[in-house]
Length: 187
Image (cartoon, rainbow, N blue to C red; front, side, top):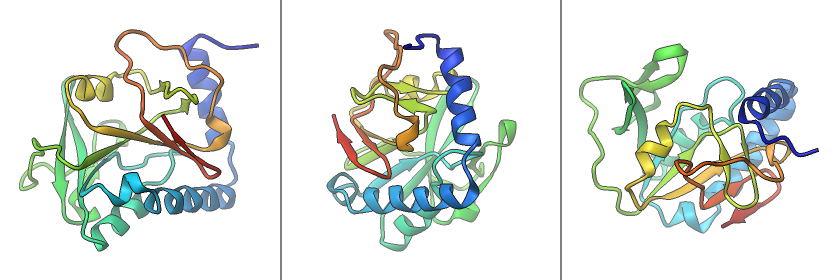
């Protein structure tokens, strides 16, 4: 049976992710990171816009550290009201826990990104489908941010969180690539 209610799907995939054994999650995260950094989409990017992982999300902390070590520019989100912007960081220590304990950039000396040339945006989500459909957390931050920008979007997902068909509406922005532990969906 295909579930078409976003609230029910969010509950389902939170449960799937939260139910993963810590060692299994660590191994899957490592496989996803390896597949990402070996992809042309990553290699060709000079600027990586990425969320800082929280809870049971695919870990991006190692991605941030690795990217900085190989000379990529990293920017992480900062939300104010309903708006999200990305600020460049030079070290993972440039971040703090923000609203709801979600990691964000430290306010202050970090550079606001306005030029998205050669950038990719790593987008969070609970589930994705093979057509690029994305089930986010319901706040619409990434959809509003991406709506008027030409940035290649990459989702990191566990294969077990891929779904047949994510229900979408006119405001939902699809992703262009999905990387799991098993494959790279190029859409």
